[in-house]
Length: 205
Image (cartoon, rainbow, N blue to C red; front, top):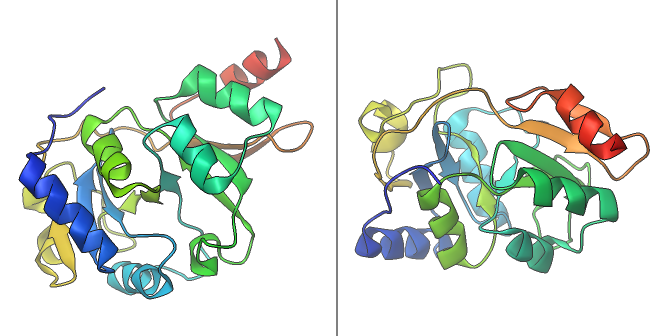
């Protein structure tokens, strides 16, 4: 996994911030992201307000492990489980049914949510210590470029609602590929770092 482990005291503060309904800027395996507790509607609304994000746009989640994702979001179907085992940790998000405890703002009323386990030690540590998957939208205003360093968070990082978990520079790169394998054939939701042909070849193999 990439990224330096965050200082334990900073990780504890980040978790307390999430539990209190705050927003945490944290490093993923690509860019810095913004985490909130997806079960707290007010926190999710604050996230949308901070980013200036269209409320119709769903927000993906990251989990510490497949075990955490299934424990919190529900058991995966066979095809989704195979994808998770093959591509996690890494830049593949799978679509699963959203449990009722996840705010409808997270999925824009679609009743499904994309989740992945990233190849990022800090991101996984945050989700593990928090005890539930967290949101993983890029840490920038909508339309602005994503950032690889905490020092470049600018207005987002200075916002009083945001706690910055600085664990060094991230690698950058393409976003995760999002796949919905709950149906046959599986559907490509978003093009990303893992080629769709590679996913299809695996599912058909």
